[in-house]
Length: 526
Image (cartoon, rainbow, N blue to C red):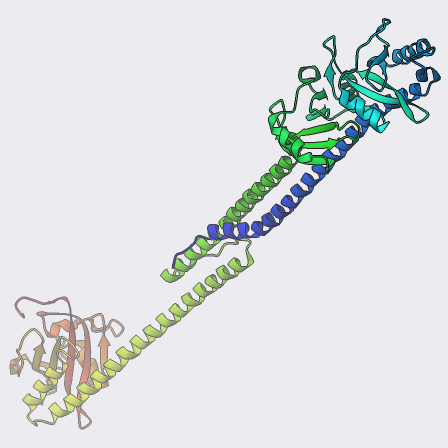
């Protein structure tokens, strides 16, 4: 199974905790974007309607002024005695409207009766007959399309009928400068980055809020023509995306005016319109990145604060395996501290258990040694019983006793027997380094009370009790000065056990069992 570091797992936990929030925020952001887009579209449509209403209001003001003038009595008799008065009145009205290039009056056939811009009689006919004929036909005010006059100046007409007795006698026309529409648009304080143009029925640009003089009289850009075609005659508004004459990709709104078939085009730069959304999206992305960074940092810090105590726990466990006792540190994590204390307690318990086990092993070893010694003693006794019961001859019995003592009890055995005169007679010696054993000569006998007789033998004869001499001396406590090794000069004894030989309640001799030192025995004896 593949192992994953704790740091990676914590990072995955942090990411898993942040992911649902990121998804929810993303969905909310998308909904917010859609809401902002709809709001921007609604705002653009509202501004376009307001601007179209403002342009229509400007045209209606002009129409109202012309209609008021058309109701004057001199205008009804402009071909006769009222012509001079009608011309004077028209010039007075023209003077109060500097945005007008002039006023002219024409009969229904299109013949110009007079013009405020000249005193000479004229026989000219009106131009742009479509708006003129529409006024005569509908008997309603009409805003015509823009055209270039005789002086080369661009202007558009606003025409109203002069009706008397239900009959259109004349058509009063005001020639309007297109700058008036541009000034009116600028007065609306259109936000920066918004572009507004007004087109007439022939798709000629009457006014624009930016670079008006440069683009005056031009037609719509190619990317905008499909919008005019889609608008048709049955729609009043249309919204889409196009590129304007400045090459700026813009959200475009077309609004048709009720007067003259004019169209107002409003364009808002997509970069500016969506800047708030991008700012929101940027804030969301930055927030998400910050959350991931904070989550990753927190996961790293938490993993470090966990892995370091866990590493210490691992060392504690290794030390416990080696039988070492290490004090547990504090990690400020309750669970890890509990495990550390448990390991420390386990180490203490293990040390106690090992000490107890060692003590038990030692006791068992001592018991086993004691049992083995007892077993050996029992075996020795059994063997001795068997050997001693095998013959009644003195020499055989003594030889059997010596062979039982060496090497089971000691390294050498020395046996003395009391003679008839009360002297100790050396009868047998035996060691593990030689097969020499048997009777010794009679001249080797010595009186019991002789100064040459070792004190330990005399003590054994008198007391009838055995004695141990671990240091190899005859016994410093009783004042004896003879060394037990004097029995066998060639033997370097370091310890001895002397026992009396008792038969039928009577002491008949002594037996000394000796233990050799590190150097063993002299060369001559070996």
